[in-house]
Image 1: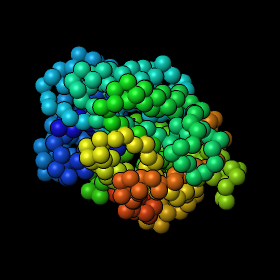
Image 2 (image 1 turned 90 degrees about the vertical axis):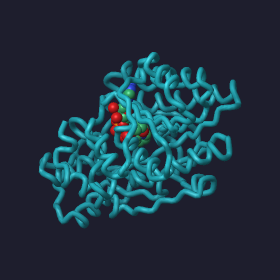
Image 3 (image 1 turned 180 degrees about the vertical axis):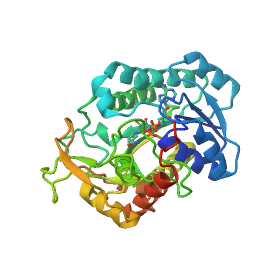
Image 4 (image 1 turned 120 degrees about the vertical axis):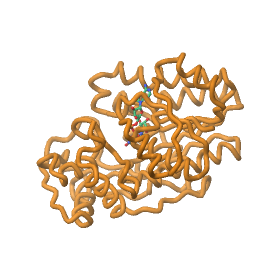
Length: 336
Ligand SMILES: NC(=O)c1ccc[n+]([C@@H]2O[C@H](COP(=O)([O-])OP(=O)(O)OC[C@H]3O[C@@H](n4cnc5c(N)ncnc54)[C@H](O)[C@@H]3O)[C@@H](O)[C@H]2O)c1
């Protein structure tokens, strides 16, 4: 059985679907601090399988202990965490507490139960912003904000555990910018409040929930002046987790890989692609740059291809199309 933490979140729910489709037995947990209970029915609807789920908090060690006592958990995919860079700057203590303390609780209980296969949601934000692009796994690490540091520290904690106990194998998956949604339009990204990420902002403007898109600077040293990122379809990303899990199970070795497409798109590229596939005009305004942002980054994704035979299937138009279908079918997200 695979334990998926943060199972009802954006990436967790898509990975849950892919795991069930691939025949894995999955137990999901979440405290719903950034997700909806409705995801449970939706996952069942998509997969035609009953989803096994228990509500609980990563900060509750007793809950985690009883979870492992009562279920034959062999591996863990750990998504649960807070992910807003802006909030992490404003309220660092709760970010560190959730992301670091939650991780430590989980690892401690795993160790007590001889469960030592772990897939970790890391991020491209662990790369030092001064690195040249594309980012390669061996480049220097560092961050500009507490969220990024929490991922950096989490990676370090896991590496220390691996040194102390060589029976552990860990997949460090450094995600680039996941967008898109399941083709059913039943699950997708549903940020609370003002979206921090570009795609939900675009889709909320398209569906009339917001008047215009704010673009943070058009004077970056890029061809059109807007920031460049490596957008990856969330289903491709989810499938990367299955491949990484299979690697841990079969090779019994750790791995650190980028999960990105290897191609950068600017904010205006993404807006144009979205307008093309949706037929909607996206009104935007240029506003101040955000502190901590950088002009551009994208992945070198060769290592993931080499080690996992993982490549992406969906292009940027398809990412926009699926994001739009999700938003159109769910104008208010999950409505909570
Ligand atoms: N979405 C991105 O752009 C991105 C990029 C890089 C890395 N990541 C990482 O991937 C993981 C998943 O991201 P996501 O986009 O699906 O985020 P998300 O917020 O949609 O999902 C995270 C889930 O974890 C749950 N959660 C948070 N704290 C919890 C706790 N203490 N106990 C139990 N559940 C808790 C939330 O309710 C939510 O359902 C996160 O760790 C995030 O930092 C995300």
